Amino acid sequence: MNQQFFVEIKCDQKNHEKERICGDVFLTEKIKEENRIIIVLSDGLGHGVKANVLATLTAKMALSFTKEHKDFIKIAEIIMNTLPVCSERKISYSTFSILDIEINDKIRILEYENPPCLILRNGKLFDPKWENIILEGERYKNRRLRSCSFYPKKEDRILIFTDGITQAGMGTKKYPFGWGIDDLTEFVTNLVNNQPSISAQKLAVKVVNMAHQLDEFHSKDDSSCVSIYFREPRKLLICTGPPYEREKDLLLANIVREFKGKKIICGATTADIIARELNLEIKDSFDFTDEELPPVSSMEGFDLITEGILTLSKVHRILTNYNKNTILGNGPADQIVKLIRKSDEILFIIGTRINIAHQDPNLPIDLEIRRTVVRRIARELEEKFLKQVTIKFI
Image 1 (cartoon, one colour):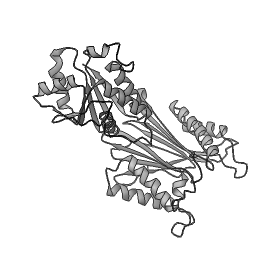
Image 2: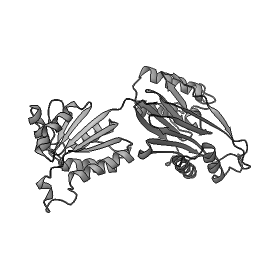
Image 3: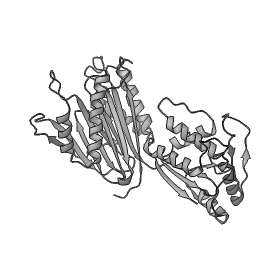
Image 4: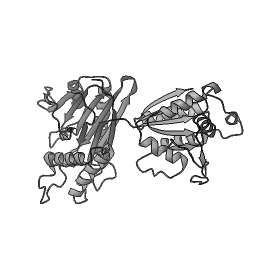
């Protein structure tokens, strides 16, 4: 398979209504050197702190062993041997789903006691030919797991859940036995067919919110939905700094002009060079939306023009502290972060001509050279936001 697509991964969760900590644990890690992404969703028995501890133990083991390319049966046996068993129910204290995604290649899925995942292709439920695995160890004899492997196609979607989703509404007149996988499948399929480009984030949120609604807005269990979407990548270029050699000014301008995607210029000198070489006009703004930074400018064919090193330094601070409760403003750095969050592949083009102003020892210590700041931003984007980042120097 040689398809090129971006893998968008989002998880949405709601805690049991009486708990501040979720008993479901979602982990994901991108292994850049192997072009792999590993996803784990684990559900600890019960809810609250105890459930979270057991689910965390399970998820971390599953992630670690999958990274090492261990056989799925071996992974399951190690986890089963490690986890305690409930003395009353005689079941493991944690369930799990593991997805091992080789980007632009094969996917492997292993499930234990979580609801069956949904795989949608062309707006319909797709069957990858699941296999049952029966474990033989004395402690976990006859435990049943499901596994499959298949090659994804562009626009495929995978959704994995904990039973807080499928059991939502249990005891109500409409769903006395819970929402169930069949009705959940119909709900998801209708959403995707009605909104073919719905993001992974929105799809996960809609599923979790519907489950919450079915529970009459009193969650009786932790509820998690992980949504994976294989799609065309959204591209963003961030250009900062003039080329080392002035003879390459036109080369820089042409690279930026021909880029297919959103475009940001960080730095007045860089913007002046591109405007001059492309015979464009920069329109300055005097609207100060961030007291720490100069206002943005605009130019035909570009989505945003900002100041350089100060703005990029603030972008790094925002990304470092970013969490689900972060509210972005309208300042230049906030606008860059918004465009980054909406993009999948980010290309940084860094000019390497030294700006004498940034060598002044009287400037703040955090005013670092351009390359260092961009590398730190790139690290955050790759490790925290799972973005594909490329850095080119000119």
